[in-house]
Length: 425
Image (cartoon, rainbow, N blue to C red; front, side, top):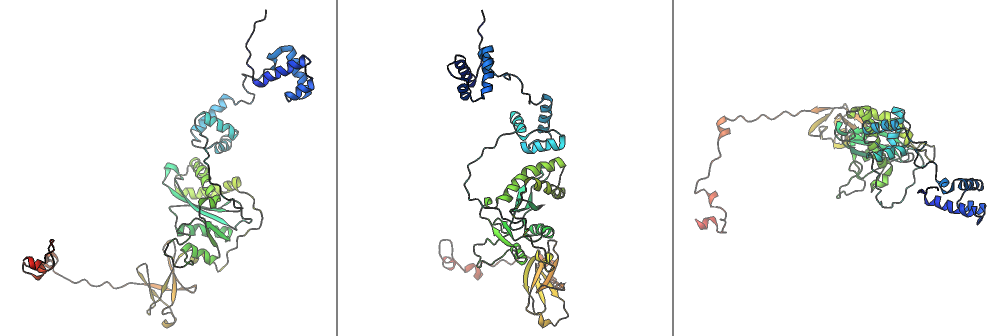
C-alpha cells in the first residue's frame, strides 16, 4: 500500500489540479480549462498528460527549493560586499554599481547591489515625505537663455578638510554645469571670478536665476528706490544680463538638484581620487564636470545658443571690480578706504574739479580710477603726521587735583532723598 505524503502547494497550483481533474473527468473541455488557468491549448494538454502520469505532485514547480540559474556565485558576492564595506563605504546603489564596473570590472545591476546592501545593513531605503504640490515650469528652449546660480556649503572633503562653498552655474535648458568653483564663502568677488571664466568660455547669457542673497539684490527695508543695485547687479546690468531672484529653493530646482547630486557623487569621487585640499578639488572639478554633463545633461528644445559673444568694450577687469563713486576736490583729491589719492594730469585743474569719478577695486586690492570710462593716473597722498607735544614724565604721571570740601562743585545738585545739597549742609 502506497504511503500518503504531504505536498506543499500554492493556491495557483491547487487551482490547476482542480481544473485538470475536471478536464480528466470530461466535465469541462480542454479549451475551457486552458482559458481558466490562462495557458495555451498545447500547454494545457502537456499539463493534463503530466497530471494523469504523476497526479497532483506533477503540478509542483521543478525549480522549488533549488538555487536559481541566475544566482550570483558566493565568491563574487563576497568580493562585492567587501568592496561596499571598504572602498565604496557610504555609496548609493547606482554609484556603487557604476564604480564596480569602472574600477573593478564587476558588472552588477544597481538593483542587485541595492538588495545586497539592504541584506548587509549598508543601505536604508529613503522614506519619501509628502511634498507641497508646486506648479511645473517649462525649461527654457535655448542654451544660455537662463542660467541658475547658487552656492552650496558642505563638507566636500569630508573629514580631510573643513567646509567650503561650491559656486555652481547650471543651464536651465539642458541641466548642464557651465561653471563651478570651490570658494571659502559666497561673496561678490567669488561670483565675479566664476563669471569671468564662464563668460570667457561660453559668452554672456541672457539672464541669471538666483536666490535672494544680498549679493544679488538689495534687501534693506528702508531702500528708497527700486533701482538700487548691488555690486553684482551693477556688473550684470553693464553687461546686459538680467537677474531674476527666486522666492523658494524649488523655483530654481535644477541647480538645487545638481547640488544634491554633487554632495553625494562628487564627495565620493574626490575620496577615491585622493583629493585632500580645495586647490586640488578645483583642478578635479574641471575633469569631473564633463563626466557629470554626459550623465545628467539633456538636449535643449532648440539648438540655437543664446550666449552673446564678449565685445571689445566689455572690459571684464573693470566691470567685475568693486566700483565706488567719488567726487574730486578742488585739489583733485579723493578719499577711499581712509587713503587720499591725488589725481595727476596734464589737463587744466578746473576741468576736473568737482567731477565724479569711479574708483575700481579688484579682488587683490588693485585700485583704478576712471572718468567716463577713461583711466586717470594718480598717486597716493601721504599726510605729514603732526608733531606730538613734548611733556615731562612728571606731568604724564600727575594725578588730577581733588576738589576741596568747600568747592562749589560739591555744593551743586541733589541728595538721594531729593533735598538740595546746599539745603542739607
